[in-house]
Amino acid sequence: MGVSEYNSALRLLLSIINNKSSTKPVLPPFEKPAIEETPVLQPFERCRPEETGVSSVRIREFLQTVHDDPTINMHSIIILKDGKIITEAAFGANRTDIAKLMFSASKSVVSLLFGILIGEGKATVDEKLIDIFSDKTTPITKLQIGELTVKDVLTMRSGIIFNEAVSMVTEDWVRGYLSSPVQGKIGESFNYNSMNTYMIVAIIDRKCGVGFEKYLETKLFEPLGITGTYWEKSPAGLPKGGWGLYMKPEDMAKLGQMVMDGGVWKGRRIVPEDYLKQALSRQAAVPEDYGDFDYGFQIWCGRKKNSFLFNGMMGQNVLAFCDNRIILVTNGGCEDNFQQSNYFKYAARYFGGKIKDGTARNDTEYRGLGKYIGSLSAYKTSPSIHGRREWKKNKVRLTAGAFVPRDDNKTTGLLPVMMQVYLNTYTKGLEYIRLYEEGHHVFLIYKEKDAVYSVKTGLESTVESELKGETFSFRTAAKTTVRYDEDENLVVTVRIDFIETPLTQTIKLRFTKEGVMLEQKENPGGRYVVRTFASLANEISMRSIVTRPVKKLDTPYLQYRIKTAFEPNVEMDIKYIDERP
Image 1: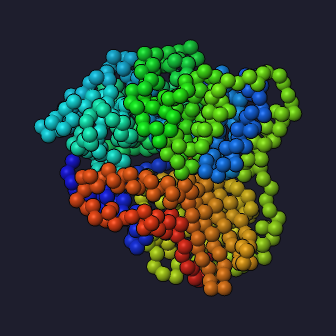
Image 2 (image 1 turned 180 degrees about the vertical axis):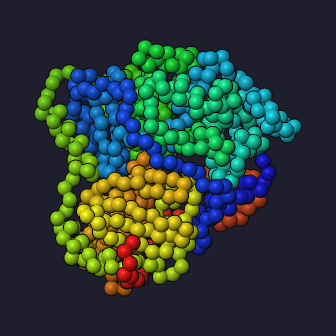
Image 3 (image 1 turned 90 degrees about the vertical axis):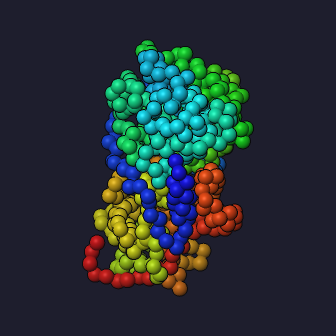
Protein backbone atom coordinates (compact mmCIF):
# COMPACT_ATOMS: atom_id res chain seq x y z
CA MET A 1 0.00 0.00 0.00
CA GLY A 2 1.38 3.38 -1.02
CA VAL A 3 1.68 6.57 0.98
CA SER A 4 -1.20 8.11 -1.00
CA GLU A 5 -3.84 5.97 0.74
CA TYR A 6 -2.58 7.07 4.15
CA ASN A 7 -2.56 10.70 3.06
CA SER A 8 -6.09 10.33 1.74
CA ALA A 9 -7.30 8.73 4.99
CA LEU A 10 -5.72 11.47 7.07
CA ARG A 11 -7.27 14.18 4.91
CA LEU A 12 -10.66 12.48 5.32
CA LEU A 13 -10.35 12.45 9.12
CA LEU A 14 -9.35 16.11 9.17
CA SER A 15 -12.21 16.98 6.85
CA ILE A 16 -14.79 15.36 9.12
CA ILE A 17 -14.02 17.83 11.93
CA ASN A 18 -13.67 20.85 9.63
CA ASN A 19 -16.85 22.93 9.88
CA LYS A 20 -15.92 25.18 6.94
CA SER A 21 -16.48 22.64 4.17
CA SER A 22 -18.46 19.45 3.67
CA THR A 23 -16.69 16.10 3.69
CA LYS A 24 -16.24 14.32 0.37
CA PRO A 25 -16.04 10.53 0.71
CA VAL A 26 -13.48 8.68 -1.37
CA LEU A 27 -15.56 5.50 -1.74
CA PRO A 28 -19.31 5.13 -2.42
CA PRO A 29 -21.55 5.09 0.68
CA PHE A 30 -22.05 1.83 2.54
CA GLU A 31 -25.59 0.47 2.50
CA LYS A 32 -27.81 -0.30 5.44
CA PRO A 33 -31.25 -1.63 4.47
CA ALA A 34 -34.31 -1.85 6.68
CA ILE A 35 -33.92 -4.93 8.87
CA GLU A 36 -36.92 -7.20 9.02
CA GLU A 37 -38.38 -7.46 12.50
CA THR A 38 -38.62 -11.18 13.17
CA PRO A 39 -39.67 -13.12 16.26
CA VAL A 40 -37.01 -14.85 18.33
CA LEU A 41 -36.84 -18.51 17.37
CA GLN A 42 -35.77 -21.05 20.00
CA PRO A 43 -36.27 -18.44 22.74
CA PHE A 44 -34.90 -18.88 26.22
CA GLU A 45 -37.18 -19.93 29.02
CA ARG A 46 -38.18 -17.03 31.29
CA CYS A 47 -38.41 -17.30 35.05
CA ARG A 48 -38.29 -15.23 38.21
CA PRO A 49 -34.78 -14.41 39.44
CA GLU A 50 -35.45 -16.22 42.71
CA GLU A 51 -36.01 -19.50 40.87
CA THR A 52 -32.30 -19.47 39.99
CA GLY A 53 -31.09 -18.28 43.38
CA VAL A 54 -30.81 -14.58 42.52
CA SER A 55 -33.00 -12.10 44.40
CA SER A 56 -35.14 -9.46 42.70
CA VAL A 57 -33.61 -6.95 45.11
CA ARG A 58 -30.13 -7.68 43.76
CA ILE A 59 -31.35 -7.21 40.19
CA ARG A 60 -33.15 -3.98 41.00
CA GLU A 61 -30.17 -2.51 42.84
CA PHE A 62 -27.92 -3.38 39.90
CA LEU A 63 -30.28 -1.80 37.36
CA GLN A 64 -30.65 1.31 39.50
CA THR A 65 -26.90 1.63 39.95
CA VAL A 66 -26.35 1.39 36.20
CA HIS A 67 -29.20 3.78 35.43
CA ASP A 68 -28.04 6.39 37.93
CA ASP A 69 -24.50 6.51 36.50
CA PRO A 70 -24.66 9.12 33.71
CA THR A 71 -21.42 7.90 32.14
CA ILE A 72 -22.94 4.54 31.18
CA ASN A 73 -26.01 5.59 29.17
CA MET A 74 -27.42 2.07 29.20
CA HIS A 75 -29.96 1.20 26.51
CA SER A 76 -30.95 -2.36 27.36
CA ILE A 77 -29.99 -5.31 29.55
CA ILE A 78 -30.86 -9.00 29.40
CA ILE A 79 -29.67 -11.18 32.29
CA LEU A 80 -29.51 -14.98 32.10
CA LYS A 81 -28.85 -17.48 34.86
CA ASP A 82 -28.48 -21.22 34.21
CA GLY A 83 -29.69 -20.76 30.64
CA LYS A 84 -32.89 -18.89 31.60
CA ILE A 85 -33.71 -15.23 31.18
CA ILE A 86 -34.37 -13.71 34.59
CA THR A 87 -34.48 -10.03 33.60
CA GLU A 88 -35.12 -7.86 30.54
CA ALA A 89 -34.93 -4.10 30.87
CA ALA A 90 -35.06 -1.37 28.22
CA PHE A 91 -34.05 2.19 29.06
CA GLY A 92 -35.66 5.26 27.52
CA ALA A 93 -36.77 4.82 23.92
CA ASN A 94 -34.92 1.53 23.47
CA ARG A 95 -36.14 -2.06 23.11
CA THR A 96 -34.75 -5.56 23.64
CA ASP A 97 -36.54 -7.24 20.73
CA ILE A 98 -35.00 -5.57 17.66
CA ALA A 99 -31.65 -6.04 15.94
CA LYS A 100 -28.89 -3.86 17.42
CA LEU A 101 -25.56 -2.77 15.96
CA MET A 102 -22.96 -4.74 17.92
CA PHE A 103 -19.81 -2.98 16.66
CA SER A 104 -16.73 -4.98 17.72
CA ALA A 105 -18.73 -7.68 19.49
CA SER A 106 -19.12 -8.86 15.88
CA LYS A 107 -15.52 -10.07 16.08
CA SER A 108 -16.44 -12.88 18.46
CA VAL A 109 -19.09 -14.15 16.03
CA VAL A 110 -16.42 -14.37 13.33
CA SER A 111 -14.20 -16.30 15.73
CA LEU A 112 -16.92 -18.86 16.44
CA LEU A 113 -17.47 -19.43 12.73
CA PHE A 114 -13.73 -19.82 12.18
CA GLY A 115 -13.69 -22.44 14.93
CA ILE A 116 -16.31 -24.39 12.97
CA LEU A 117 -14.14 -24.13 9.86
CA ILE A 118 -11.17 -25.52 11.79
CA GLY A 119 -13.33 -28.33 13.15
CA GLU A 120 -14.16 -29.35 9.58
CA GLY A 121 -10.46 -29.56 8.75
CA LYS A 122 -10.60 -26.67 6.29
CA ALA A 123 -8.23 -24.32 8.13
CA THR A 124 -5.59 -24.14 10.86
CA VAL A 125 -4.27 -21.30 12.98
CA ASP A 126 -0.70 -21.98 11.83
CA GLU A 127 -1.22 -21.17 8.15
CA LYS A 128 0.58 -18.15 6.73
CA LEU A 129 -1.48 -15.43 5.09
CA ILE A 130 0.86 -15.20 2.11
CA ASP A 131 -0.01 -18.83 1.33
CA ILE A 132 -3.76 -18.35 1.69
CA PHE A 133 -3.72 -15.19 -0.45
CA SER A 134 -0.88 -16.05 -2.80
CA ASP A 135 -2.72 -14.33 -5.68
CA LYS A 136 -2.56 -11.01 -3.83
CA THR A 137 1.03 -11.13 -2.62
CA THR A 138 4.17 -9.59 -4.08
CA PRO A 139 7.87 -10.04 -3.33
CA ILE A 140 7.64 -7.01 -1.03
CA THR A 141 4.62 -8.56 0.75
CA LYS A 142 6.61 -11.71 1.41
CA LEU A 143 9.45 -9.69 2.89
CA GLN A 144 7.16 -7.61 5.13
CA ILE A 145 4.64 -10.19 6.37
CA GLY A 146 6.03 -13.52 5.25
CA GLU A 147 5.84 -14.93 8.78
CA LEU A 148 2.34 -13.61 9.56
CA THR A 149 0.06 -16.49 10.62
CA VAL A 150 -3.67 -16.82 11.15
CA LYS A 151 -3.01 -17.07 14.88
CA ASP A 152 -1.26 -13.69 14.85
CA VAL A 153 -4.33 -12.21 13.17
CA LEU A 154 -6.81 -13.91 15.52
CA THR A 155 -4.96 -12.63 18.59
CA MET A 156 -4.44 -9.01 17.42
CA ARG A 157 -0.68 -9.48 17.24
CA SER A 158 -0.27 -8.88 13.51
CA GLY A 159 1.29 -5.43 13.89
CA ILE A 160 -0.46 -4.39 10.66
CA ILE A 161 -1.01 -0.62 10.40
CA PHE A 162 -3.83 -0.77 7.82
CA ASN A 163 -6.82 0.20 9.97
CA GLU A 164 -10.50 1.21 9.85
CA ALA A 165 -9.75 4.79 8.77
CA VAL A 166 -7.59 3.71 5.83
CA SER A 167 -10.27 1.21 4.81
CA MET A 168 -12.61 4.16 4.16
CA VAL A 169 -10.41 5.18 1.22
CA THR A 170 -9.43 1.68 -0.02
CA GLU A 171 -11.55 -0.59 -2.25
CA ASP A 172 -9.63 -3.85 -1.87
CA TRP A 173 -9.22 -4.35 1.88
CA VAL A 174 -7.42 -7.69 1.54
CA ARG A 175 -4.79 -6.27 -0.77
CA GLY A 176 -4.50 -3.15 1.37
CA TYR A 177 -3.96 -5.28 4.47
CA LEU A 178 -1.38 -7.55 2.85
CA SER A 179 0.61 -4.60 1.49
CA SER A 180 0.53 -2.69 4.77
CA PRO A 181 3.68 -1.96 6.74
CA VAL A 182 4.11 -3.53 10.15
CA GLN A 183 4.57 -1.74 13.46
CA GLY A 184 6.91 -3.66 15.75
CA LYS A 185 7.50 -7.39 15.37
CA ILE A 186 4.80 -9.76 14.14
CA GLY A 187 3.44 -12.08 16.81
CA GLU A 188 4.70 -10.15 19.82
CA SER A 189 2.63 -7.20 21.05
CA PHE A 190 -1.15 -6.72 21.20
CA ASN A 191 -2.36 -4.09 18.71
CA TYR A 192 -6.16 -3.95 18.41
CA ASN A 193 -7.20 -3.54 14.77
CA SER A 194 -10.57 -4.43 13.27
CA MET A 195 -9.02 -5.19 9.90
CA ASN A 196 -7.51 -8.33 11.41
CA THR A 197 -11.04 -9.66 11.78
CA TYR A 198 -11.91 -8.75 8.21
CA MET A 199 -9.04 -10.96 7.11
CA ILE A 200 -10.54 -13.88 9.06
CA VAL A 201 -13.80 -13.26 7.18
CA ALA A 202 -11.87 -13.32 3.90
CA ILE A 203 -10.16 -16.58 4.91
CA ILE A 204 -13.49 -18.22 5.77
CA ASP A 205 -14.95 -16.99 2.50
CA ARG A 206 -12.11 -18.61 0.55
CA LYS A 207 -11.98 -21.88 2.41
CA CYS A 208 -15.57 -22.78 3.32
CA GLY A 209 -16.68 -23.58 -0.24
CA VAL A 210 -20.02 -21.76 -0.17
CA GLY A 211 -19.10 -18.17 0.68
CA PHE A 212 -18.97 -16.53 4.10
CA GLU A 213 -22.62 -15.55 4.44
CA LYS A 214 -24.05 -18.93 3.41
CA TYR A 215 -21.60 -20.68 5.71
CA LEU A 216 -22.52 -18.37 8.60
CA GLU A 217 -26.21 -18.97 8.04
CA THR A 218 -26.09 -22.76 7.79
CA LYS A 219 -23.38 -23.53 10.34
CA LEU A 220 -24.12 -21.02 13.10
CA PHE A 221 -27.30 -19.00 12.71
CA GLU A 222 -29.76 -21.70 11.61
CA PRO A 223 -28.84 -24.19 14.37
CA LEU A 224 -29.40 -21.49 17.00
CA GLY A 225 -32.56 -20.06 15.43
CA ILE A 226 -30.94 -16.68 14.75
CA THR A 227 -32.89 -14.58 12.24
CA GLY A 228 -33.41 -10.94 11.27
CA THR A 229 -29.72 -10.03 11.11
CA TYR A 230 -27.71 -7.77 8.81
CA TRP A 231 -23.97 -7.34 8.39
CA GLU A 232 -22.59 -4.19 6.76
CA LYS A 233 -20.46 -4.94 3.71
CA SER A 234 -17.01 -3.95 2.53
CA PRO A 235 -16.54 -2.57 -1.00
CA ALA A 236 -15.83 -6.16 -2.09
CA GLY A 237 -19.22 -7.30 -0.77
CA LEU A 238 -17.94 -9.25 2.23
CA PRO A 239 -19.24 -8.56 5.75
CA LYS A 240 -16.94 -6.11 7.51
CA GLY A 241 -16.26 -8.70 10.20
CA GLY A 242 -14.69 -6.50 12.84
CA TRP A 243 -17.88 -4.46 13.13
CA GLY A 244 -21.21 -3.91 11.39
CA LEU A 245 -23.34 -6.84 12.62
CA TYR A 246 -26.94 -6.11 13.63
CA MET A 247 -28.47 -8.80 15.82
CA LYS A 248 -31.23 -9.10 18.42
CA PRO A 249 -29.92 -9.11 22.01
CA GLU A 250 -31.53 -12.47 22.78
CA ASP A 251 -29.79 -13.99 19.77
CA MET A 252 -26.47 -12.61 21.02
CA ALA A 253 -27.31 -14.26 24.34
CA LYS A 254 -27.67 -17.60 22.52
CA LEU A 255 -24.10 -17.31 21.26
CA GLY A 256 -22.90 -16.49 24.77
CA GLN A 257 -24.79 -19.43 26.26
CA MET A 258 -23.47 -21.78 23.59
CA VAL A 259 -19.91 -20.70 24.40
CA MET A 260 -20.52 -21.10 28.15
CA ASP A 261 -21.79 -24.63 27.45
CA GLY A 262 -18.56 -25.56 25.68
CA GLY A 263 -19.77 -25.06 22.11
CA VAL A 264 -23.01 -27.03 22.48
CA TRP A 265 -26.54 -25.72 21.82
CA LYS A 266 -29.55 -27.81 22.88
CA GLY A 267 -27.44 -30.97 22.87
CA ARG A 268 -25.89 -30.33 19.45
CA ARG A 269 -22.18 -29.65 18.99
CA ILE A 270 -21.74 -26.32 17.14
CA VAL A 271 -18.17 -25.19 17.80
CA PRO A 272 -15.31 -27.61 18.57
CA GLU A 273 -14.50 -27.76 22.27
CA ASP A 274 -10.74 -27.69 21.69
CA TYR A 275 -11.03 -24.50 19.67
CA LEU A 276 -13.13 -22.80 22.35
CA LYS A 277 -10.61 -23.69 25.04
CA GLN A 278 -7.96 -21.84 23.05
CA ALA A 279 -10.30 -18.99 22.14
CA LEU A 280 -11.17 -18.39 25.81
CA SER A 281 -7.62 -18.60 27.13
CA ARG A 282 -5.09 -15.79 27.15
CA GLN A 283 -3.27 -15.65 23.84
CA ALA A 284 -2.21 -12.00 24.09
CA ALA A 285 -1.52 -9.88 27.16
CA VAL A 286 -3.50 -6.64 27.02
CA PRO A 287 -2.42 -3.36 28.67
CA GLU A 288 -4.14 -2.98 32.02
CA ASP A 289 -5.68 0.37 31.13
CA TYR A 290 -7.96 -1.47 28.68
CA GLY A 291 -9.72 -3.19 31.60
CA ASP A 292 -9.66 -6.52 33.42
CA PHE A 293 -9.54 -8.76 30.34
CA ASP A 294 -6.83 -10.27 28.16
CA TYR A 295 -7.35 -11.51 24.61
CA GLY A 296 -7.98 -14.96 23.20
CA PHE A 297 -9.16 -15.68 19.67
CA GLN A 298 -11.27 -12.55 19.07
CA ILE A 299 -12.89 -13.12 22.47
CA TRP A 300 -11.84 -11.35 25.68
CA CYS A 301 -11.00 -13.56 28.66
CA GLY A 302 -11.13 -12.43 32.29
CA ARG A 303 -7.82 -11.66 33.95
CA LYS A 304 -9.17 -11.83 37.50
CA LYS A 305 -12.36 -13.90 37.15
CA ASN A 306 -13.48 -16.97 35.24
CA SER A 307 -15.25 -14.90 32.64
CA PHE A 308 -15.36 -14.11 28.94
CA LEU A 309 -16.63 -11.19 26.91
CA PHE A 310 -17.82 -10.20 23.44
CA ASN A 311 -17.07 -6.48 23.53
CA GLY A 312 -18.25 -3.69 21.22
CA MET A 313 -17.61 0.02 21.59
CA MET A 314 -20.09 2.30 23.33
CA GLY A 315 -21.52 -0.48 25.48
CA GLN A 316 -22.38 -3.50 23.30
CA ASN A 317 -21.45 -6.53 25.38
CA VAL A 318 -22.04 -10.20 26.08
CA LEU A 319 -20.42 -10.65 29.50
CA ALA A 320 -20.33 -14.11 31.10
CA PHE A 321 -19.42 -15.05 34.67
CA CYS A 322 -18.83 -18.77 34.19
CA ASP A 323 -18.67 -19.85 37.85
CA ASN A 324 -22.15 -18.40 38.48
CA ARG A 325 -23.42 -19.31 34.99
CA ILE A 326 -24.64 -15.75 34.57
CA ILE A 327 -24.64 -13.90 31.25
CA LEU A 328 -25.41 -10.21 30.79
CA VAL A 329 -26.20 -8.88 27.30
CA THR A 330 -26.11 -5.10 27.09
CA ASN A 331 -26.51 -2.39 24.50
CA GLY A 332 -25.59 1.17 25.35
CA GLY A 333 -24.29 4.53 24.26
CA CYS A 334 -21.37 5.28 26.57
CA GLU A 335 -18.18 7.13 25.65
CA ASP A 336 -15.74 4.53 26.95
CA ASN A 337 -13.72 2.01 24.98
CA PHE A 338 -13.04 -1.63 25.73
CA GLN A 339 -13.75 -2.40 29.42
CA GLN A 340 -13.15 1.07 30.84
CA SER A 341 -16.82 1.78 31.59
CA ASN A 342 -18.08 1.69 35.18
CA TYR A 343 -20.57 -0.91 33.95
CA PHE A 344 -17.95 -3.66 34.24
CA LYS A 345 -17.21 -2.69 37.83
CA TYR A 346 -20.89 -2.84 38.74
CA ALA A 347 -21.47 -6.13 36.88
CA ALA A 348 -18.57 -7.79 38.71
CA ARG A 349 -19.78 -6.43 42.05
CA TYR A 350 -23.31 -7.81 41.71
CA PHE A 351 -22.72 -10.99 39.68
CA GLY A 352 -19.03 -11.88 39.70
CA GLY A 353 -18.71 -13.10 43.28
CA LYS A 354 -20.50 -15.69 45.36
CA ILE A 355 -24.29 -15.32 45.30
CA LYS A 356 -26.20 -16.74 48.28
CA ASP A 357 -29.59 -15.09 47.82
CA GLY A 358 -31.63 -18.27 48.13
CA THR A 359 -34.73 -19.33 46.23
CA ALA A 360 -37.46 -18.10 48.57
CA ARG A 361 -40.38 -16.57 46.67
CA ASN A 362 -41.10 -12.93 47.51
CA ASP A 363 -43.97 -11.48 45.50
CA THR A 364 -43.51 -7.97 46.86
CA GLU A 365 -39.85 -7.75 45.80
CA TYR A 366 -40.62 -9.27 42.40
CA ARG A 367 -43.46 -6.82 41.75
CA GLY A 368 -41.18 -3.98 42.84
CA LEU A 369 -38.60 -5.08 40.29
CA GLY A 370 -41.22 -5.19 37.55
CA LYS A 371 -42.51 -1.74 38.47
CA TYR A 372 -39.00 -0.30 38.42
CA ILE A 373 -38.23 -1.84 35.02
CA GLY A 374 -41.46 -0.34 33.69
CA SER A 375 -40.45 3.10 34.95
CA LEU A 376 -37.26 2.98 32.86
CA SER A 377 -39.13 2.90 29.54
CA ALA A 378 -40.02 6.09 27.68
CA TYR A 379 -43.00 4.31 26.12
CA LYS A 380 -44.73 3.91 29.49
CA THR A 381 -44.54 7.54 30.62
CA SER A 382 -47.57 9.83 30.41
CA PRO A 383 -47.44 12.78 27.98
CA SER A 384 -47.09 16.24 29.52
CA ILE A 385 -50.38 18.14 29.41
CA HIS A 386 -48.46 21.38 29.94
CA GLY A 387 -46.24 20.67 26.95
CA ARG A 388 -49.21 19.92 24.73
CA ARG A 389 -50.82 23.19 25.85
CA GLU A 390 -47.68 25.18 24.99
CA TRP A 391 -47.49 23.55 21.56
CA LYS A 392 -51.11 24.43 20.86
CA LYS A 393 -50.58 28.01 22.01
CA ASN A 394 -47.50 28.46 19.80
CA LYS A 395 -48.52 26.20 16.93
CA VAL A 396 -48.85 28.94 14.30
CA ARG A 397 -45.50 30.39 15.27
CA LEU A 398 -43.84 26.99 15.06
CA THR A 399 -45.41 25.59 11.90
CA ALA A 400 -46.14 28.54 9.59
CA GLY A 401 -42.60 28.96 8.32
CA ALA A 402 -39.28 27.30 7.69
CA PHE A 403 -36.21 27.85 9.86
CA VAL A 404 -33.36 28.77 7.53
CA PRO A 405 -29.66 29.16 8.44
CA ARG A 406 -28.64 32.82 8.41
CA ASP A 407 -25.31 31.96 6.80
CA ASP A 408 -24.37 29.32 4.24
CA ASN A 409 -24.08 26.04 6.08
CA LYS A 410 -21.93 23.17 4.80
CA THR A 411 -21.63 20.69 7.68
CA THR A 412 -24.77 20.58 9.85
CA GLY A 413 -26.91 17.54 9.11
CA LEU A 414 -29.58 15.33 10.65
CA LEU A 415 -27.54 12.12 10.90
CA PRO A 416 -25.10 11.97 13.82
CA VAL A 417 -21.54 12.51 12.59
CA MET A 418 -20.49 9.07 13.80
CA MET A 419 -23.26 7.54 11.68
CA GLN A 420 -22.10 9.54 8.68
CA VAL A 421 -18.61 8.16 9.22
CA TYR A 422 -19.48 4.48 9.33
CA LEU A 423 -21.99 4.86 6.46
CA ASN A 424 -19.35 6.84 4.53
CA THR A 425 -22.02 9.37 3.56
CA TYR A 426 -21.71 13.00 4.62
CA THR A 427 -24.06 15.96 4.68
CA LYS A 428 -23.50 18.87 2.34
CA GLY A 429 -25.18 21.22 4.78
CA LEU A 430 -28.54 22.33 6.13
CA GLU A 431 -31.00 24.32 4.00
CA TYR A 432 -33.98 24.52 6.34
CA ILE A 433 -36.03 22.87 9.09
CA ARG A 434 -39.81 22.70 9.21
CA LEU A 435 -42.30 21.43 11.76
CA TYR A 436 -45.89 20.46 11.09
CA GLU A 437 -48.62 18.60 12.93
CA GLU A 438 -50.67 15.74 11.58
CA GLY A 439 -53.06 13.90 13.87
CA HIS A 440 -51.35 13.39 17.20
CA HIS A 441 -47.86 13.55 15.71
CA VAL A 442 -45.36 16.27 14.95
CA PHE A 443 -43.22 15.84 11.84
CA LEU A 444 -39.73 17.27 11.52
CA ILE A 445 -38.72 18.05 7.95
CA TYR A 446 -34.94 18.38 7.75
CA LYS A 447 -33.88 19.64 4.32
CA GLU A 448 -30.22 19.29 3.43
CA LYS A 449 -28.60 20.40 0.18
CA ASP A 450 -28.64 16.87 -1.20
CA ALA A 451 -31.32 15.11 0.87
CA VAL A 452 -34.68 15.60 2.58
CA TYR A 453 -35.55 13.67 5.76
CA SER A 454 -38.94 13.35 7.40
CA VAL A 455 -39.00 12.26 11.03
CA LYS A 456 -42.26 11.27 12.69
CA THR A 457 -42.29 12.24 16.36
CA GLY A 458 -44.73 12.07 19.23
CA LEU A 459 -45.87 15.30 20.84
CA GLU A 460 -44.69 14.86 24.42
CA SER A 461 -44.50 11.11 23.80
CA THR A 462 -42.18 8.73 21.97
CA VAL A 463 -43.18 7.11 18.67
CA GLU A 464 -41.30 4.90 16.23
CA SER A 465 -40.86 5.27 12.48
CA GLU A 466 -38.37 4.60 9.68
CA LEU A 467 -35.89 7.22 8.57
CA LYS A 468 -34.98 6.56 4.95
CA GLY A 469 -32.10 7.87 2.89
CA GLU A 470 -30.81 7.00 -0.55
CA THR A 471 -28.67 4.10 0.70
CA PHE A 472 -29.98 3.43 4.20
CA SER A 473 -32.97 2.93 6.42
CA PHE A 474 -32.93 3.28 10.21
CA ARG A 475 -35.57 2.67 12.84
CA THR A 476 -36.06 5.78 14.99
CA ALA A 477 -37.92 6.62 18.17
CA ALA A 478 -38.58 10.35 18.40
CA LYS A 479 -40.26 12.81 20.73
CA THR A 480 -41.04 16.54 20.51
CA THR A 481 -41.28 18.59 23.70
CA VAL A 482 -42.12 22.24 24.26
CA ARG A 483 -40.72 24.06 27.27
CA TYR A 484 -39.39 27.43 28.44
CA ASP A 485 -35.80 27.88 29.55
CA GLU A 486 -34.62 29.84 32.60
CA ASP A 487 -34.76 33.06 30.57
CA GLU A 488 -38.37 32.39 29.54
CA ASN A 489 -37.36 31.61 25.96
CA LEU A 490 -39.54 29.10 24.16
CA VAL A 491 -37.58 25.92 23.36
CA VAL A 492 -38.79 23.14 21.05
CA THR A 493 -36.74 19.97 21.41
CA VAL A 494 -36.84 17.00 19.05
CA ARG A 495 -34.97 13.98 20.37
CA ILE A 496 -34.28 11.24 17.83
CA ASP A 497 -33.01 7.88 19.06
CA PHE A 498 -31.63 5.67 16.30
CA ILE A 499 -32.66 2.64 18.31
CA GLU A 500 -30.78 0.04 16.23
CA THR A 501 -27.58 1.91 17.15
CA PRO A 502 -26.09 3.59 20.23
CA LEU A 503 -26.68 7.04 18.70
CA THR A 504 -29.03 9.88 19.59
CA GLN A 505 -29.49 13.25 17.91
CA THR A 506 -31.08 16.12 19.87
CA ILE A 507 -32.33 19.16 17.92
CA LYS A 508 -33.39 22.32 19.75
CA LEU A 509 -34.96 25.47 18.37
CA ARG A 510 -34.53 28.24 20.93
CA PHE A 511 -36.58 31.41 20.39
CA THR A 512 -34.84 34.49 21.81
CA LYS A 513 -35.21 38.25 21.35
CA GLU A 514 -32.33 38.13 18.86
CA GLY A 515 -33.92 35.40 16.77
CA VAL A 516 -33.99 31.61 16.57
CA MET A 517 -30.97 29.49 17.48
CA LEU A 518 -30.62 25.91 16.27
CA GLU A 519 -28.70 23.82 18.81
CA GLN A 520 -27.80 20.23 17.94
CA LYS A 521 -26.05 17.66 20.08
CA GLU A 522 -25.39 14.00 19.43
CA ASN A 523 -24.60 11.34 21.95
CA PRO A 524 -22.12 9.68 22.19
CA GLY A 525 -20.24 12.70 20.97
CA GLY A 526 -17.10 14.77 21.14
CA ARG A 527 -15.39 13.26 24.18
CA TYR A 528 -15.42 9.82 22.62
CA VAL A 529 -14.28 11.05 19.24
CA VAL A 530 -11.33 13.03 20.61
CA ARG A 531 -9.73 9.79 21.80
CA THR A 532 -10.73 7.69 18.79
CA PHE A 533 -9.70 10.32 16.26
CA ALA A 534 -6.33 10.88 17.90
CA SER A 535 -5.59 7.15 17.95
CA LEU A 536 -6.44 6.59 14.28
CA ALA A 537 -4.66 9.77 13.17
CA ASN A 538 -1.50 8.84 15.03
CA GLU A 539 -1.41 5.38 13.43
CA ILE A 540 -1.96 6.83 9.96
CA SER A 541 0.56 9.64 10.39
CA MET A 542 3.33 7.07 10.78
CA ARG A 543 3.01 6.48 7.02
CA SER A 544 1.60 9.81 5.90
CA ILE A 545 3.60 12.74 4.58
CA VAL A 546 0.72 15.03 5.57
CA THR A 547 1.74 15.23 9.22
CA ARG A 548 1.79 19.00 9.78
CA PRO A 549 -2.03 19.30 10.22
CA VAL A 550 -1.95 16.59 12.88
CA LYS A 551 0.84 18.31 14.79
CA LYS A 552 -1.18 21.52 14.83
CA LEU A 553 -4.14 19.76 16.40
CA ASP A 554 -3.20 20.23 20.04
CA THR A 555 -5.84 19.03 22.48
CA PRO A 556 -7.71 22.35 23.07
CA TYR A 557 -7.97 23.09 19.35
CA LEU A 558 -8.93 19.51 18.54
CA GLN A 559 -11.66 19.61 21.18
CA TYR A 560 -12.94 22.93 19.82
CA ARG A 561 -13.18 21.61 16.26
CA ILE A 562 -14.88 18.42 17.34
CA LYS A 563 -17.33 20.33 19.54
CA THR A 564 -18.37 22.52 16.61
CA ALA A 565 -18.82 19.42 14.45
CA PHE A 566 -20.79 17.42 17.02
CA GLU A 567 -22.62 20.27 18.77
CA PRO A 568 -23.31 22.94 16.13
CA ASN A 569 -25.09 26.18 17.04
CA VAL A 570 -26.63 27.85 13.98
CA GLU A 571 -28.42 31.20 13.84
CA MET A 572 -31.69 30.83 11.98
CA ASP A 573 -34.19 33.10 10.25
CA ILE A 574 -37.86 32.31 9.82
CA LYS A 575 -39.07 32.24 6.24
CA TYR A 576 -42.84 32.16 6.09
CA ILE A 577 -44.21 30.04 3.29
CA ASP A 578 -47.69 28.94 2.32
CA GLU A 579 -47.13 25.49 0.85
CA ARG A 580 -47.64 22.43 2.97
CA PRO A 581 -44.66 20.06 3.10
